Length: 85
Image (cartoon, rainbow, N blue to C red):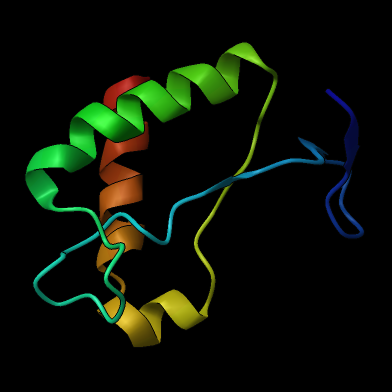
């Protein structure tokens, strides 16, 4: 995995990140690919473990995600990260 500085900080992050905008609330999502909550935890655990195995050190939910799902995917991402610790 290749790493780079995050902006002007001294923080090194992987050049590949794990996108998380499809995790959220399928009933309230703005696109058809939003994953149901029942599937979220199983899938995010598998994706996160695979990402970690390959050196991915960063996750991402775009700012537009707040407009698309009201920030639900960010809330869930935070909870999953806490569970993975």
